[in-house]
Image (cartoon, rainbow over all chains, first blue to last red; front, side):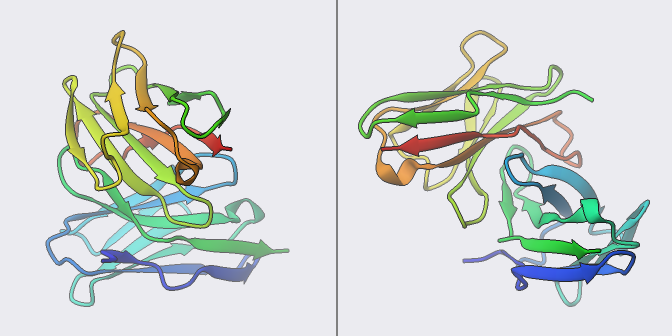
Length: 112
Length: 114
C-alpha cells in the first residue's frame, strides 16, 4: 500500500535548467507535504513543505506545487546546480507524533 | 544550526547479538523517531516517542525492538537479538512538537549483521 508514489527512480538534468520532481499520493486527507533531500552517507535533510491550504510554496530556487484534485505535488528546482545532485523524497506525516511516510525517492543527477 | 547526532556511524555485529543505537536529539525537541532504510529501499518509519513513552510504532517494530530515553538526553534503539535482515541504515529524527514543523534527521548508523 503505497500512500506516496514517486514513479521516476532517476532524473538527469543539465546544469542551469529546471528540474521537476513528481510525487503522487492516495489519501485526500493528507494536509501537509514535505520534500527531503538526501546525499549518500547522510540523513535526509528537510528542503521545503506545503500545507494543503496552499497550492504553491517558494523558497529561493525551490518551489513546490500542490494539485489537490489530482493528488499530485511537484518540486521545481531552477536553476539546477551540481550540488543539487541527490535523492529527493516526498513525505507525508500521519499527524501529531506519527512518523513520516516516504516515497521511494528520485535520484536527481545534474550534468555539467 | 542544531543537529541530531547519532553514534556509532557504523556497527558490525554477529547475528543473535544485541545492539544499541544512540541518538542525541536537538535540545528543545519533544518528539523522537527511529526510521530504517534497507539498501535500495525507501526510508521506513519504525517508532515515535513522546513524553517518555511510545506514541506509535509500525509493523516492523516487533518485540525484538525497544526504545528508551535513559538519561534525559540520549534516545536509544535496542535490537535484542539481531537477524541478518536487520542490516540497514537506521536514522533518528526529532521534532519540536509543532505538527507543521519538519522532522530533523541524523546522519544514521549503518548496521551490518554478519
